[in-house]
Image (cartoon, rainbow, N blue to C red):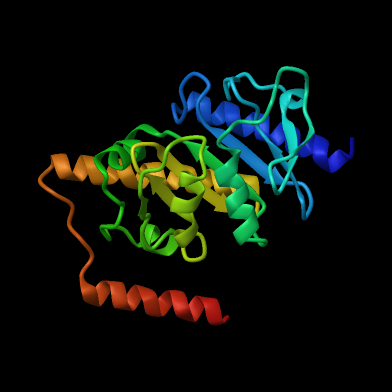
Length: 217
């Protein structure tokens, strides 16, 4: 096993444990993956708690989902299909994280996107977090539901299901998951206080100007 693959296996397990300790997943929920090469994906196995995974339990599949390598009794999660759709449509992406964080998943269960502009950090990081329509787990319905959002967003709520984030590396994809959950909790708590105060159109326009200026540098 190459050093890079060994390190990625350890990183997946470390982040899985972090997700479990932060209550972003319960029992055996959630899954993570990274791109090893153009056509090889390393992913978490089905039926294993993300808090107790071992590097040798991870699976290797190709972009069609064909299993290239797995430990006996530790096949890939059936939800790897949505990860593969991200990699197929976004060759620049190298990591995908799926979890069920409490606040963000509450919005997903309610059928509500995270689209209220309340903080500059939220606008800079996401713009908004859209809601993909419901799809039956483990089928092609979920990959089909998320595909329209892959080009323009970095995170998405899955209706009645959870959250999916993607990035150029696993740490960043996980940090996006943390940020989505923080955003969702803020919206929930400010609603309990009488409703969030949205940024004005003028403030949003000024923020967009600053973002564009930064991108030109």
